[in-house]
Length: 342
Image (cartoon, rainbow, N blue to C red):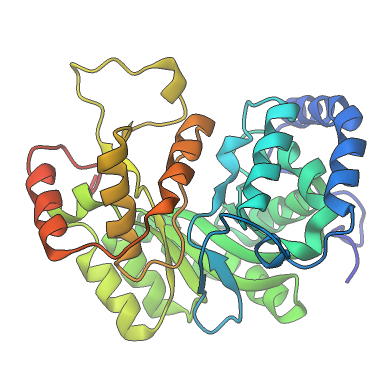
């Protein structure tokens, strides 16, 4: 497979020229750190991070349905790289790889996330599982964004590719499946191997159910949050249908607590969260274990580096949730304002 350029040459990206110039400057700034990163990554290591001999504190893995892939039970959200420093990204990616986290999820709409991750990941492309997403529903827009993501990340294929954030039938699902919609392009790319496995991320029950009815997706992302599940009745129908159809799913918002209370100031360190995150370790452990007990393949933590690290710190105890603990979570959720349904 060749690089992701069409026959006519460059493709105009939906991302602005100013954005791309800024991203390019950040990428040039990262050149100095790149050599050390490449040497560290290539220094005699073979296989995925989770398979390295002598690795300690490596996370358990779960199969992604019938794809043949296995994912660590905690993945890496590309939002950690957005608006971060190259040195910090290099460090947190390295620490994640040491824990067996070789699944990296990003998106075209995550600001400079793809640019910041590219120098660290491209030298281990064959050893990682790379996912990215598009919010564009037309064939033309999705194709341009796909090619731009390939260009930035220095790859000619994605292990996992998603329709990003589908919520409405008329604005998201219907346009993607219409003539000239994004599905035409994605099916072609899946046949060619440039998309290995195709999925979607959904933020409404209606959209998730409709997507599963219209195409045999390989996987999907969905909010699996104890507060939304128990206090908002959000999730039971979608998860039941996924299990019935045998479609594997990953958890979004497992570490989300509730909508920001008016009485609680939104702290600067949580600027990447539009919701109030779980910060109490005991509650976080219960929330993470509950999500993983719902047949979730992998949990994608918040994109804030501090919150990501707090989630990783909970991985020492991943025992299945008990009935008594579930009742405790139900009682806690009853006093909160769930994120979903919106």
